[in-house]
Length: 302
Image 1: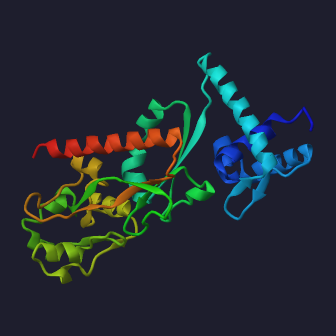
Image 2: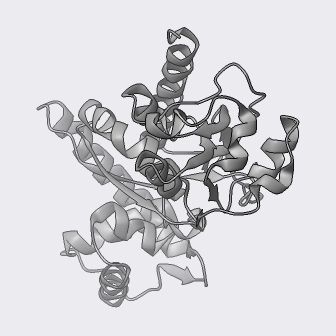
Image 3: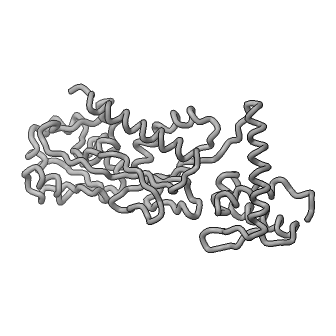
């Protein structure tokens, strides 16, 4: 077996062996999946044996690959331990995926605090309506909208607490609403994918559900909330998503304490049953932030 092997190829092999995925290894090393695959194929040609069995979603080590993986893991872990004695930490990439409205309204504004507290992590946040495929390494963890995307089998899920669903509008619009019945004359803004619709909320509060038939529709909560801030009408949405607008007075609940507003568990953090240490740090931070929010809401004056 050759004794002079390219370090970059060995690093790509080590990452893929640990993660079981070329794509996940590419994310960790800030490379493309094709670059990782090319480096590993070049390594296999150098050593003269196959190191992986390629599958459609994941890769598995061959017997030779397992022997080499034990050696590379010991070598790279030993190098990392040695560097730690000099105060040098290896930067790692943490890829987080999220449902769009949670990412835009709640997570992204807070992420600077997590990044500052974890300088050894390169955080990548992506958002799309469809969940990430964690098995293929598209993300290390995912914040999903539970009513549409329950966690798939084999993955762990951490529920992210209840969200209050309430009417929200600008102060100017609120001046035209003295009682819930006045919603019959208001423009009602609809979030298309919300579990609680205007017809549900109206019926729950003893009003005609037909009042909620018309009005502009948005396919993302953050768009509906932005429209309410701009004075388009009254949105029915999560107060978690609108907490900044509620805190600075751009939005208010026009009927606070006078209506029956439902609370639902809408989101969950989905992760591997055996997450790595970076994901565990993110989970702890996320739950801590949510706990602080709950306390702030309970003690908010008014």
